[in-house]
Picture 1 (tube, rainbow, N blue to C red):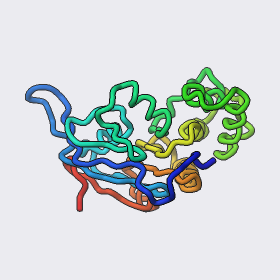
Picture 2: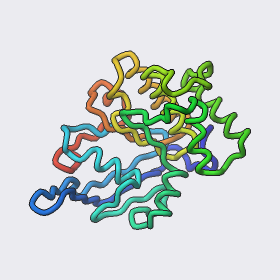
Picture 3: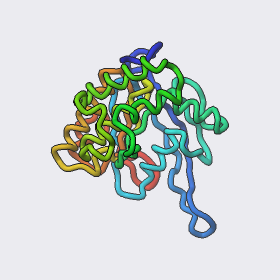
Picture 4: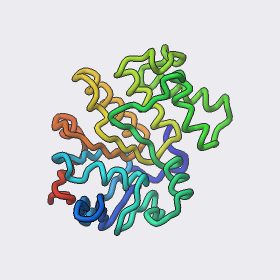
Length: 234
């Protein structure tokens, strides 16, 4: 399930230059990001690490086009995105980005299959039977072939997060962004979910950027990016 028309492995698919972002109002306004530059290549896994409040999640939200920088530029697959309007940013998120968060954010009244099909329905690239076939294949790839018709609230925490990974991969994104993807799981499930996430991304030739406080998980990534006070340490 490699992305159609994908660029070669190792080619930068996500890049930012001199990103600045301040949050808050008045005297409480904080300069969270202070000129961050970064590039992520296909088939490689990047771990952003650092103390709480150093800017990791703020940067991830900017890279995911969920927020707009005060200054600086972001490119996805060679296209500058940082100044596009909301409609263009939403379309780019749907085409290029997959998200996995600490909490799975499944629709618990929907089945695992239906949850994985949701992004595909929004993108509109495949017909109903193709979407269903893709969702079945993705759930099988995360070890949930036998639980496709289970409701979200009938799955364990580890299973729910595996459904979230399958959902993040649904539209063949170029980039996976993960914010503490194992932070709500026990040790065994953390290791399993992390291996699934990074293994599938490498297999599919996707760049993956992970925010984590877990040094063991960070050490298993291709690149570790320590951050402090809104900048990567060099």
